[in-house]
Image 1 (cartoon, rainbow, N blue to C red):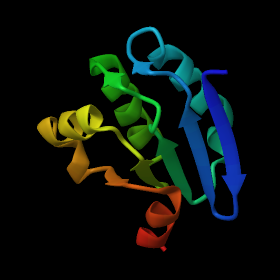
Image 2 (cartoon, rainbow, N blue to C red):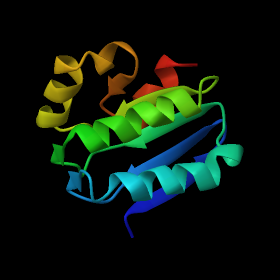
Image 3 (tube, rainbow, N blue to C red):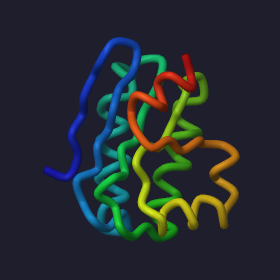
Image 4 (cartoon, rainbow, N blue to C red):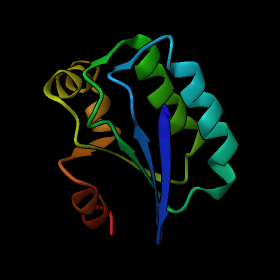
Length: 110
């Protein structure tokens, strides 16, 4: 399974269960997000803990989520160092904050 959707209280977690978030995975992510967007709670948490590589397609998919869910808080949790570096390089870290855990993300946006 590429993604796991977990709904808890006022937040929804999308856990990406692939090592590469690239052109192969991005369309599936967009489809998954489109199919659940009406059910997403106040806060979307993207768990990228298993992602070791992300290319421009993966970044585009995350930015697409940001644009699609304008009135929803979005956080990234448990990103690996290459993903953190990429988010900083593209300045996406200013739009979507990263946190070490789901609990930290939820607490930061409460």
